[in-house]
Length: 280
Ligand SMILES: C[S@@+](CC[C@H](N)C(=O)[O-])C[C@H]1O[C@@H](n2cnc3c(N)ncnc32)[C@H](O)[C@@H]1O
Image (cartoon, rainbow, N blue to C red; front, side, top):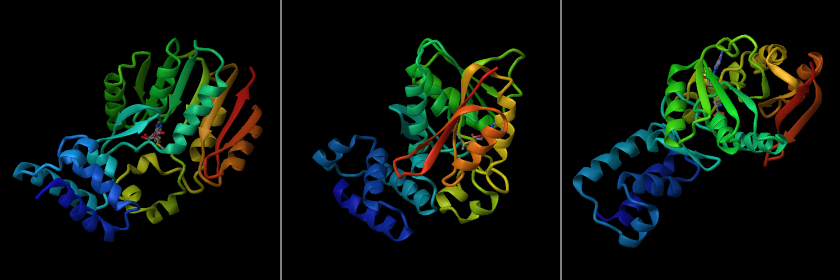
């Protein structure tokens, strides 16, 4: 069978699976399975050999079980970086790119000490380290698997001004660690809502990357007061938040004496990023 015929076949197989864009996913799976770029695939319409068929059929089988496309291809893009992902690490989302952009706009110096709490694949830490090359970035996560990906991503993207540490929130830091910017996309889904999410998320992505406690705010309640010890004078603490949590997170900032509290909306007009300053 030739590639373009196979493309139709894959698209048909994916269509009944409640996948948003089966034709696009078929293209991605096929060109990855054939190990050739998309333009080449359309131009040459190659005959698919037996070995390639086995690889492609395995990818389709995995996708039919609702395994996320990015776990199957093994990577995603984040702010122009190629980020490896797989089971055990959260797939970076477009709204998180917006947080990286907001942080980049807000910082007016290149020599910063930056902390990314709950770093996962390291996407935020790496995007900031790449943009601020004279800065030092630290990423912390509790998951060993996530950190394996984060370190691999730093290496693959040749980013040296970043280090990753394992542990609960601020625990791995030494005394007197002070940061200009602390950024975090913590787990923020309400526990009860996780099982109602699409299977790609609820069945495949790590629970400890999603579960924000009963009301989704556990991490904000812990990080906001604790961060005061780790922020420089007028340092910034910035969060991504759940679709309806921005005002509550802003309230927690206020309760703990932060100022210049700001909320930024994402491309869907959802209040998505909340940040504030701490004065010593
Ligand atoms: C929503 S994911 C964010 C990952 C990544 N920063 C991103 O934006 O794609 C949350 C991350 O928090 C980590 N995490 C969960 N509990 C933690 C804890 N107590 N301390 C540090 N990291 C934790 C998870 O392992 C997961 O990687």
